[in-house]
Image (cartoon, rainbow, N blue to C red; front, side):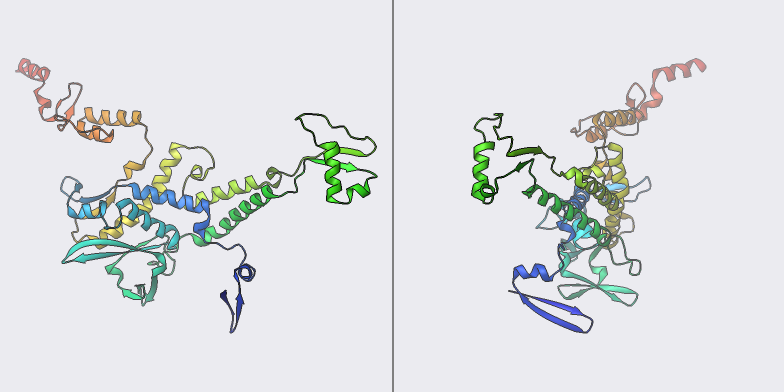
Length: 391
């Protein structure tokens, strides 16, 4: 037994009903967006991409930004919590950001004696955001928290309260309902028994045809055969057989509607349509997805981590975006080989990009066709000889 309260203006009513009656009283067919397989698949792909990237701790130097490897970088990139790996932790954050938290994801940083401990992600149902003057505060399990003391990631900020995310729930809800209805229609159609491929007209047999047993007897005597392909022997005066084409899913145009809705979902969430099973894989489309969808989300996460977890103005967090682009091994080899012979990268940097282990002697920069060290470029014999002749 469950209780359902319906409130309208100043009047209210209470209904007592069982689980079967609940479906009659509540809105028919309602379900949350995470129950829609297309929306869930698109959000999961985005979360999987972001959680797969290494998180670098970077520092500004006079000759450019360099990666810093220390206990802080290890904490965020490898062991953000005793209960999660980095991928699981970041996956949880992004899924809250996109779907469960309606554009908001909150993480509590725990500290001990000034040292950063576990970074605890909070489920969306435990969090509430309360406007407070020009700003706001966050309650978690009813306990008030200052926004400066927690990590609050925002997606698609509200036009009146920019500190609050709104997500894409309103935009996607109608499309999700369409996809759900299409699935229900297809399932109902496939399970329907009203799809005969033959119609048999029977004349002057009212008595025999009046009962199920009589109809079964007629089919058994004249229509059913023991061998596949065996012809029927029926009285010409009594039976007339017509073949019909039953209604198909193609006639209902469900496939076209579903394809259009899937493309719409893909467009709204910024994922390639082939992720949802529409169209073929294209490398250019994939790389555009990384640039236009993954990068903005990643930058938002980077900025919040930098703002709340780092004191030094010369340091910041950065995702390894290059790891997500679609490049074949031949393209990578050609690009980095050209960089290597021009003295821009070392041999071990090339090997690293090709997933090969480093080798001794490949840490120096080389240049030209002789592969000599960059510092020895002026020691080539042809240059020395030319100088002696001029002297």
